[in-house]
Image 1: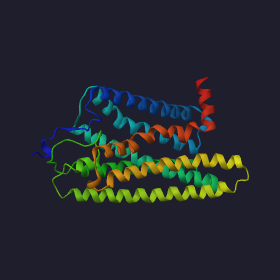
Image 2 (image 1 turned 180 degrees about the horizontal axis):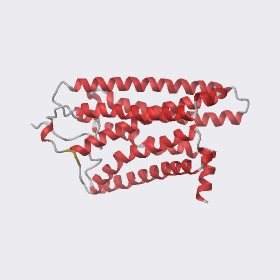
Image 3 (image 1 turned 135 degrees about the vertical axis):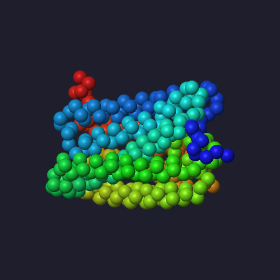
Image 4 (image 1 turned 45 degrees about the horizontal axis):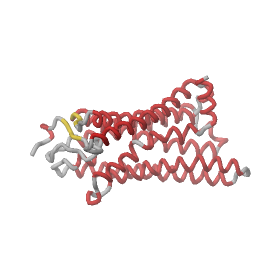
Amino acid sequence: MSNSSSITQFLLLPFTDTRELQLLHFWLFLGIYLAALLGNGLIITTIAWDQHLHTPMYFFLLNLALLDLGCISTTVPKSMANSLWDSRAISYLGCATQLFLFLFLITAEFYLLTVMSYNRYVAICKPLHYGTLLGSRACVHMAAAAWATGFLNALLLTANTFSLPLCKGNALGQFFCEIPQILKLSCSHSYLRELGLLVVSACLAFICFVFIVVSYVQILRAVLRIPSEQGRHKAFSTCLPHLAVVFLLVSTAMFAYLKPPSISSPSLDLVVSVLYSVVPPTVNPLIYSMRNKEIKDALRKLIS
């Protein structure tokens, strides 16, 4: 038996013990990571370079791309390195840092997606009030609030998690440091306090999710009144993928953090964690930006 004071490192869950499959995992994650870097990097560069894109919508997209880059860079490179070097180890400080950064970025991203849904709602349903409700100062304040909320939430959860005494070894059943896996190592009833914090965070996330859904329902109702069939199709093809990504992020994250231990298994936990930590940062550039005509035009100008 050991306690948290004697733990100097944690052991992460390997995707496989077969060397060939470890290398396959490395190359697969490398491809995903490079795709995410390329997509989000192009968005950041294009929006920062083109003066015509310095509007509220693209300001939020720039913030989303930054959060996506940070989010996937927090978990995937370490997993790739472990597969390449046939290792499982991550230091105690490295685990705490990874957990804090991931919680910070994923929480800020979700609150930013909530702000972006409000931005679209105002732009489509209340266009005459757009300049009043979403001026440049208001946009900066809303984006800053999303980042600050993510920071405070991550700080509170990380500090509380690593203040728990750990006496059930140091092996984590996940490919990155995740709260539910660390709580399994706790030998104190104080973990109920952490579960309470997670439930509160989940309730806030669910409220934001309801707000997002209501916003998009109002948008779709307005879209149905558009006389042009092409305009309706364009709006539907834009809104529905946004809702799908948000639903994927919320449902898988809440399942990962709030599911009962009786239905937990390494393979299920692994699949769910990939769905909410790796997939959204990779597909967000395609769904939110690369299908946008203004972004594509600006990108062509930048390349040429």
